[in-house]
Length: 89
Image (cartoon, rainbow, N blue to C red; front, side, top):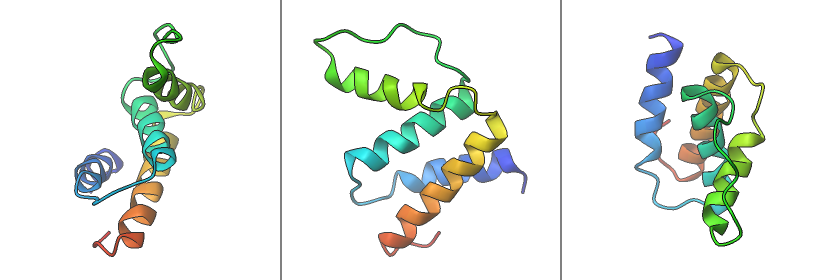
């Protein structure tokens, strides 16, 4: 399989995780957005949207990272979380 197929497979596998910390979810979110959209292309959410701000910041933290690097980092993080949950990676 190619990188894109592996990435899509792990994006599906992550949905089966029983629970993750908010920090881990934000890492995955930021990498996923960078891999699928590229650099941040929206304004940072305002004061009354703390969840949106956290997600935007996680995405912004990956700015400049290539699509391939983002996909590889996402797969690595997903494998770690799946193994920690005792699920097949």
